[in-house]
Image 1 (cartoon, helix red, strand yellow):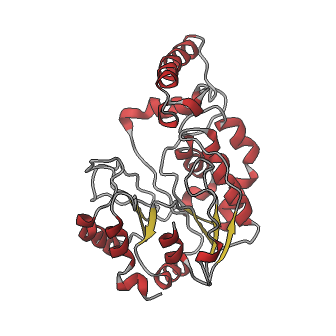
Image 2 (image 1 turned 180 degrees about the vertical axis):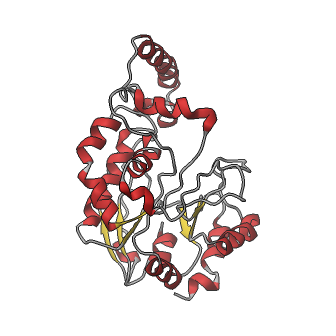
Length: 295
């Protein structure tokens, strides 16, 4: 986290930091780790994979940051790093005002599964397989989730039946402008009504809001990706390798440095996923790059 904050530390950047209450770093005060940026660190909250709490966390950060009316808002996590200098980042966005940077994903084989994330109710997500190590709870959730889906299909439950909206799937890591973030916040009540008791819709709510609004015409890169190859471009300007493994997404190692350099040449500004417990050397290599060091 400290290395990421150091790479963002610039008088032109304000940093809004929200840490999961379950994280080992939840009690660390990071305010002294930046000298140029203003940093706003909030009390930790519990955030669960796949749960509506992910959307609540994002909306909380958007709401806090939007009070200051920035030109752009970059949603990243501690697993991200910039690939280029702050000068280059600011220069790029100064030259591309009033754009939305999202990755829209085309997944024809799973269209129904993605729709089912929203169209039927999902309860007890906080104890799903990725959120607990308890074997009993894992087994319970696995059985329950199947029965939950069967029962709702049997009774023709469809939360989207009268909504007349197009569900769009994409990456939850985005760069969006001030006008769109104000629009998102104005739809907070609708967001809660539509996405509470759903699963994994942090990857759905922003893309769905975008494509059902006038802001879809402001996408910087509108072509959808299938995340199957580095030949595709990800419109959120985050280089994320979903195709080669062994992890999905791939956690970068020292041997991947040249691939990250090539991503930078293609126009990517950030990359993920980095993990210091997996390979700290690649983090050091990326951050000591002259392009980042020369802010």
